[in-house]
Structures are given as structure tokens and as C-alpha cells.
Length: 174
Image (cartoon, rainbow, N blue to C red; front, side, top):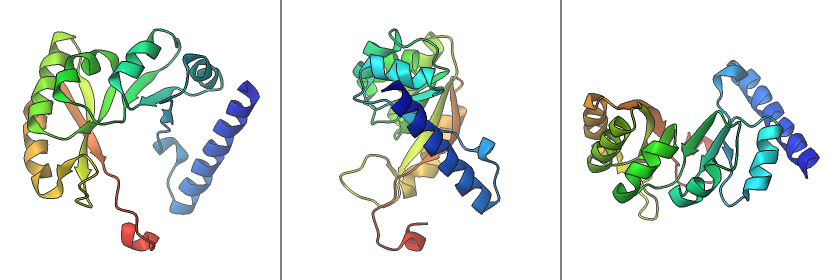
């Protein structure tokens, strides 16, 4: 299985290299987050041994169970929805939260990160398609959330995370 993971990781990196070349960008400017959700710690350890350095989990509790079992990870990212009541644990476990979607959550993460003595990197999750089944701040409210998050001393907003609606025309999605 370790060889399979190594081969799949190499194939993804080749696709990133090719896509970056086509767009005139450096592949070094692309961050690969290896999604480890639902995978057992043993498989995640194999991915780290194969060269994965940034892991993405979508549930706080699942990450809490894995973090201590998987040494050598450079960064843990929360890629799933985060409820305010889980902010304290999330701020302690993760290096980056991809799902900051409310002012209330921003304040909870800021307080928890401050108590942990860290500056927590975040992405604002924007629901660009205004789809009810997806999380994220509405596009019209994103500027207010950004303004508030930028004022909080223990948060570092690094960008946006958005999943557009599925459309048959890729250009329309872009």
C-alpha cells in the first residue's frame, strides 16, 4: 500500500507541475493539502512517509484522534465546517482553518488561539453559489467578516476558500 500511496502522490504532483506550467505559474506556488479524512492513522503515516507534509481533516474529533499518532506532519489543516463550540480544540490542533464563515466563529477562534499562544491561519469560506447545502459566508457579507477578522490579533487571514456550484461549462465556473 505504501508504494501505491507514493505513486499516487507523485502522479498528483506531476499534474500540479503540468497545470502550473500551462498557466505560467511556478508549481512551488501551489500548496498540496493531502486530505486524510476517514483514513486510519496507519495509512496517514504512510502518506507522510511518502512525502505528504500538509494534511487536511474535516472533523475536529477525527483529527484529535490522529494528530498524536502521526508524527512528522508539517501542518494540519481543518477543511470542514467548524462549529463555534469546537473552536477551542480546533485552534489547538490545527495550523490553518479553511472554514471561517462567521464573525462569531472568528472571535471564538481568536480567543482560543490567543489562549494557546499562537496566531491561527485562516481562510474565509465564501458560499459563492449561495447554495443552501454548502457552508460559508454569503458573498455580500464576506467583506464585513474579513474586516472583523483582520482586526483580531490571534488570527491571520490568508485568503478565501470557495467551492463553486457544479456547472457544465468550466469557463462559467471560473
